[in-house]
Length: 95
Image 1 (cartoon, rainbow, N blue to C red):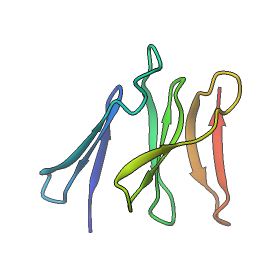
Image 2 (image 1 turned 120 degrees about the horizontal axis):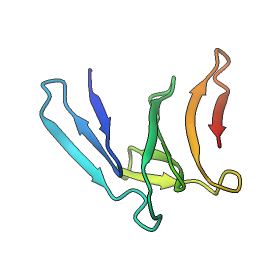
Image 3 (image 1 turned 30 degrees about the horizontal axis):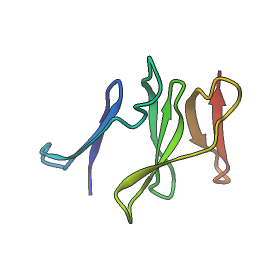
């Protein structure tokens, strides 16, 4: 099943294969000034990860249809990229 996710400054939009909007997840990080989404990634297991500017790392929870935040990463809490290697090890790049 093909799907599309588009990130804007502070939200993720999920579209179906026919490009109809399925759901919009807004204000992921409302408490952080000058926030924004750096990147979005789908890992080998189908998990959706969102890296934000100053707001940290988020993972989509399919069961509750929400995003879960993780503890701060580094002093600026600004992950900008995440990927998995061939051994399914997660790598998170931060500022």
